[in-house]
Image (cartoon, rainbow, N blue to C red):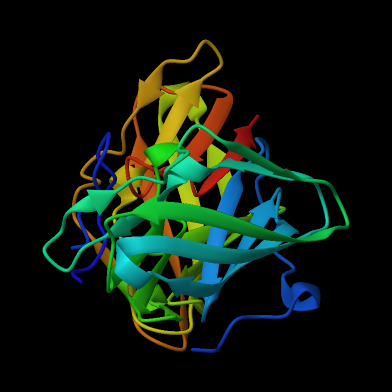
Length: 268
């Protein structure tokens, strides 16, 4: 199984300090806005976050497939109600062929504060991989399948992002890589200056172009010379300045990939 990059319509291609405590974050920051849903996989379990708080945990328990008849068993533990489609779970052959669930249109709903066992069935499957792709738009989790065993493959997933208040925590393979906080955004005479505080646990790189300054009427502004990646060494902090032109009060959106919004903030 290759690293997972993006989701197609039907098929997936598998293709100087540590983080500061909240009390130590004295610098003012842009106020958060928006309501992001985020997914972080640790081992066999995917934790679903909404507005930075845990919404649910989804664990792949077993994946028997005698005679090609697949049965994927999940445990869903919720704090808030969670719904998803059986069709969001794809069973992939080693050759890359995808199998949809037998009842791909089935909607599964789990009420708040509930633990529920969920079974999804397949036809013509064997050892391979299982992928959870909500809405077939983003990848939430990946597992290896061998016999009845199903094992988390979080190392194959792209980075995930959870915004809590003004800060976005970046996870890779379920572990914290960095924290990014926009601390200020000024725009005298339309000349925008955005300051980002980046606290890296591990070496972390990003492109300023992924931070889009939006006008109140929805117009987008890209960073000036923002295509060059910025790298922050492990266990260091760095303030990054990003420049814009012809901007005003509005909002800031960080979209590191086409399938994810990592964070949103208010400007002005």
